[in-house]
Image (cartoon, rainbow, N blue to C red; front, side, top):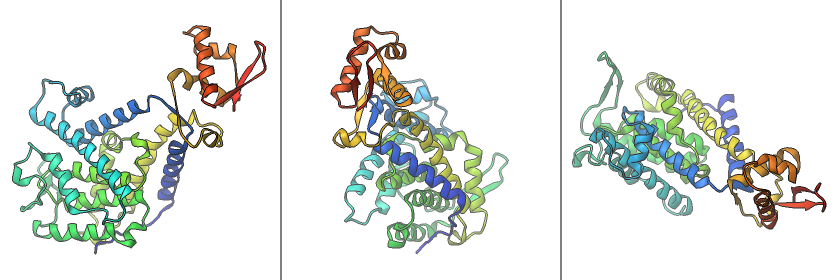
Length: 358
């Protein structure tokens, strides 16, 4: 059975600490923007666009958005199909991740899951007999100058290597590893084994996301690791290559440096989401007062609550300054709605009355 070699370094601990802090705040914040759904849609778009752009897809972000929306655009057929396919992959891992999270009775991950992801990635791009099926030929990756920069294991070894990987992933010892590291290990192992003729990178990244989603690190689906990888493409490929260049035997490679990079990427992505939510992070007891539920706020209410959180309260005069483009009656309605939701209370009866956290 495959078991990865790595060391828990200070860098990895720091990154996981940042991830856990962001996860706790994002998942437990009592107040969230009502436009969270649009944030999730943006994260899906970024995942699809950057996840295919890494592999050379030439569509822009706006073109990818149009394709996802079902619009016809003037672009290469393959580029369009790659975006359509990866959008389907995102839906698949979202649904499967939820099932795996809720149903721990079955052996978590299966080769069929991996093959289905690859099938969706390459549908109508590769011939039918190559979609979702392990390669039967040798694969090498060459630089523009023709130099071999990566040579995959012989095709005859692929079934054995994949079974060994899944045995690790589903084992008791494998499950004892932190989910972020498990996702990083899955990403690297699948890239290194290169089980398919084409589409290995997209398949590996999607499977890593599946591990995160299934094991409680979906973080409200508000992040895109693919965007970080694409914007730091040289570092991404260099980290993978340096790990693969160590020795020919997969079991003997030290994944520490790669896991530092992977965990740092996730920490950076989540810190950006955290900053958005943190402005609304108020009294920790508030969620309990609200019946344990998260309360979505309209955009104007977000601004009011950010001010209350920063200043400890808000007067009517200050509220008008925070949302100046509306009438006083509208400001009062927003504050009254926050009161009715049990978030704030009014102190005083005169014009100098103040609204504070309940």
